[in-house]
Image 1 (cartoon, helix red, strand yellow):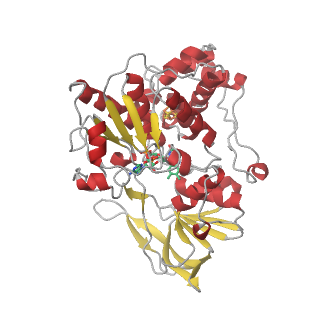
Image 2: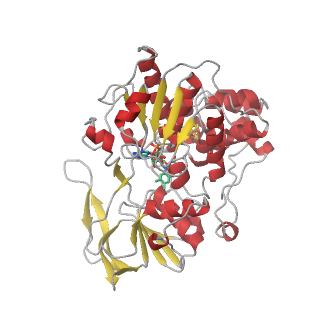
Image 3: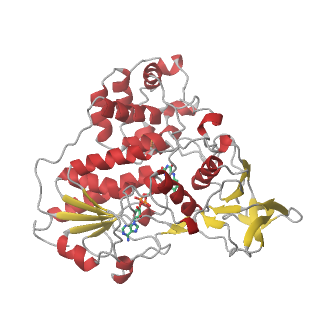
Length: 482
Ligand SMILES: Cc1cc2nc3c(=O)[nH]c(=O)nc-3n(C[C@H](O)[C@H](O)[C@H](O)COP(=O)(O)OP(=O)(O)OC[C@H]3O[C@@H](n4cnc5c(N)ncnc54)[C@H](O)[C@@H]3O)c2cc1C
Ligand code: SF4
């Protein structure tokens, strides 16, 4: 550990954000960065806590946090980078957009504010790029075996990167114009600038990974084709089936899924054409975002930047407590109110609100009729049941409604359906302990198998699938086909 008394000498310091009045006029990254001195102080706050829950319980990648904190404190950036990259393929993504599950289980967080782990992680990888420590390192030895990865989100990228580094030939297919999945097309530029995704994709290409974009596997490319050219397949096609709100008026114009809205904005910023007949824009509109999660918050920030006249976000669940709920004691990830940078830009938030009906005129939405709800625990236990509160109906005016109520699963995929790959009862793709599906040689990773989750979990699962694929291929002759 760095400084024995660091956790007593220094408080937590977060870098904060660019001023609201400035940042809402552009889509550039909103979060600032800690200075070199502040980083050393934050690293010094890491205690010699015996059992580092951040590493073993908090971080899905098992990032070796205390050790790299110590190395940063001592100015050993190259060693810190090597240690970080040993467990995390893409710290430049997690360092920017991970909710920092590790910080929820930091021992210092029991009675003080946790160590600013995510900021230190980001500093290590960015220092690595700045000082030229991160450079293409293609494998010295190659196997003959080839792997097709379907989907270039964080799970597919992590699987491809790990397999390529292990010496396998990897081709990544994606139906979008550019690689990155939700990293590129879902998460707004102001949270994750796409130059960061481009930089990593370029590095992977220089190391030998091939990207075949604008190719929908199952339609443009058949299973027969993949089977004849590859020794294993990794499905990492995400879980993009949006949850709908089937109440009267749903057919009205001006009601859209959040992802359609967010994808368009990212395409615009990326210089990709957007069909003008299908454009969804918030400028000059009263926007209501249905769904109180992160995707909803991204819609809030994007609507504000597009010039919405008002933005309201409604959520059916009750308002979480301001601090850690007793139901999620340390070291669990705390259930508590989260206020994103977008919420601070001018948005009204309401909780315990159900939508009864969409209202409209001339085929377009003009508002929502809502009611307050309460969540009642059934006698004898069980999950709380929602009940509308009588006499609480109210009306919200809206010209644009964005549905951000989560995702129900991976939806249909021609190959999965044709091969009758086993699905879990909830529709997710089933797998064994090595991430292999019910069809030998076909593996799965990320949201497609564990349901819509987080970038850090997708990376961890991509790494796990890569290990499973490597073990499967090692058991087979090099020429063997899946
Ligand atoms: C708006 C939004 C914001 C989010 N913000 C955060 C955040 O701040 N932090 C965080 O940790 N998590 C966030 N998440 C969650 C996170 O982005 C996902 O959990 C993660 O991207 C899942 O990775 P994945 O690789 O499994 O799938 P995806 O990222 O969905 O990638 C799947 C890829 O497969 C492609 N594909 C699908 N079918 C085919 C096919 N048949 N042929 C070829 N390609 C195909 C898709 O086009 C896509 O590119 C957010 C999610 C959303 C929707
Ligand atoms: S990836 Fe996320 S959970 Fe893991 S150490 Fe980094 S910020 Fe923490």
